[in-house]
Image (cartoon, rainbow, N blue to C red; front, side):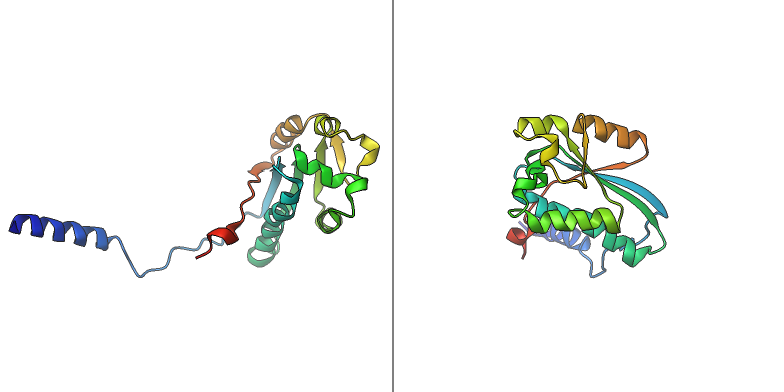
Length: 165
């Protein structure tokens, strides 16, 4: 019985030895130049509001930790979120559309929308906002941008507020 107690105490000490009061390392180094493409194939057009935060967080990080750094940003939209770019949906998605349009001007953000997706959603090219570029296929545009040195950033939207402790 004593051996079992000592064994359990030993295991407890070993497991606690991994716990430390030290803080995790914070690596704030950012590259001087980077190209990033955000892959948007969102389940719901409403998710685009949260997906913009990926881009905003990218820009904020550079503004804070490498203000002299250079970056090129792009979005490739090839999912239901492409509906936000329809002129007839402007009022419904006004905040998102205006914010993205502003980013195209202020940060030279390029937005590419898949023609196949547009057709599948029942839209025509002339139905879309003028600040986007229509491409033959979103997946081809993703590959093309990666060939040009862009780093692929999958945009997976989660509502982190649900998990906040």
